[in-house]
Length: 492
Image 1 (spheres, one colour):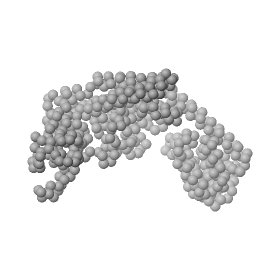
Image 2 (cartoon, one colour):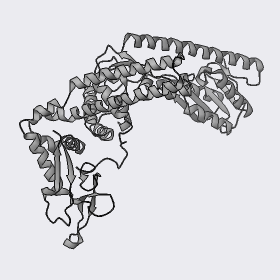
Image 3 (tube, helix red, strand yellow):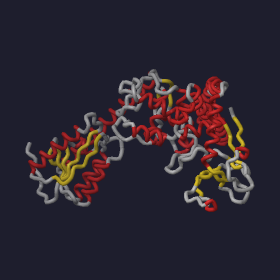
Image 4 (tube, one colour):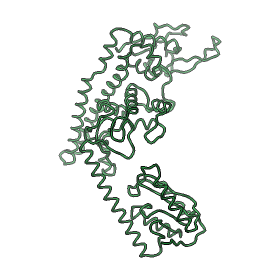
């Protein structure tokens, strides 16, 4: 059927959309080609193509291309909208009605490759298009319900989830990825040992590692991969805030919001207990965020303590003009005001501490003590206790829902259980953190070689694990480094 269109001096806009494109944009490209052929047939100039690739028109997700299209229609930048079919524009009756009203108010035409020109002033045509939009909305709702039921069944069976985008560390079939899975395990060990997400992301990028979508690794990418329950072998569904009242949502813990059902039947990238400790570590409110500029740049910064006030000491550059030294030297100093707080030149202090650490690591008894630092029995005990506490919290919530417990009692008892849970998670983090760095060192034959190649963050974690360092005030300028004014207490 030949398309007829009222003449317009404004260019046409092409809108293309597909809910899920598995062929690298081929779906929207085919739609665009068909719309351009239609524009040529109608003698229209195409001003702009508005595209929403892999975005549903039913789910309510933001569609940037559609938003721009509506804005340009309202601004009268285009005189006609060309699209492949009505369901490309919208699968929601209300949204489709508002869009048609906008077109009508601005005298902008609407033409489909499959459907022809829409007569916006004809009530009969308007009724038919609205009915078709309603059918599309119904089809999407049925499909959404069917897909949700299928996913729920898979979760109940413990099957590996198959989202549109492959999860880093796994193949599409749920097998361990030969190169990505070891990277995830290494990242988990290093983060529990004190390293930052940002450093790992930078190393991945430098090594040519990309996300499963081919993008650049970022700290947020690494965090998402590590915190996804699938990585730890758990089947789960994500709770929706819209399904709960504000009060109910506020009472849910971050763990509850993960919607973990149980263990899956696939081989996990991370041991489940390690993943749980890692999740607790990354969600710990006391954990410092890795903002740019906050990553320690010096071996003992924040680790060495002031002998007068006990505050952490930090590193800065300071010039000693009395000695006619042109270049400033790094010094560790206490930020507290007043006299009597020590300052120490950094290089000899760092060399002294390094020698102490390496000597200690070379002692014959240290390997056994380091290996004993990973208390697997205690970790298993804590994990069991944590599951019991979570069970009590779930029972308490059910009793409150049934009205057997007042909200005041619920709040008080829930806070007590939450405090217990926080204490358990804190100890698990401590165990996992010590295990990460010490277990690695326990198997190292040449400690000196390991130290030379280790990152600054790993070295700092070894020092924190092995000792406490207190810098005493000398009562005057220290012309030569004197270890007598450095107090070291060994933890192991």
